[in-house]
Picture (cartoon, rainbow, N blue to C red):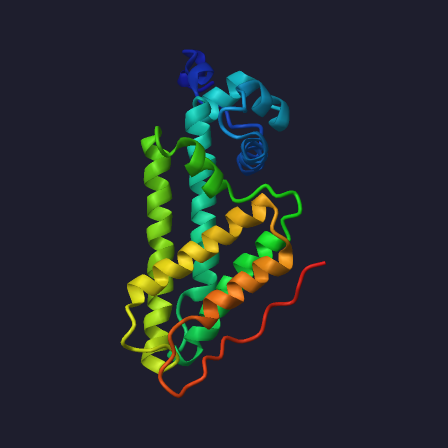
Length: 224
């Protein structure tokens, strides 16, 4: 027999987790998303995940640490979606990529029939004023989105689809505000067609070079 086992060492060795961490985090996210941070108890998380509170504390820490993990994962996903639509590609397609992203965000909000909104917006609204971790992660996410939008605007300017004299930083900030604002007013109850029209209008007002019509592409297919 191994001396470590004979000396009782095996009893102190960490046991492998008998649960799917990703699944637990997804269920915890759904709970926080539905009831908010303040409205969620660890008992609620335990019921949603099927784990005892002891296991939750042991694996993820207290409620705040668990929310930070869920919130951070969500913010990462938000940026990854934007990167998938906006990162890389020829300048000639920059405006199409930009338009596709703005319209996708409007379509996602239009399809949110439960009006749950975005966990990023909900978490920041509830906690950013008193939780430095949430505040920092929210600001980091918005900065990343702003950078992606600005990069595409600069590319569209190089190709001559957006007026080169316009300030790309201000235009990026405008589109970011529109995208995040669509989510807010959609949650408040504006109808889907209005949300889509907001996206179209924001794209239409992008300054174009004199004598050149701004083509922003077609809307994505609507989800039934």
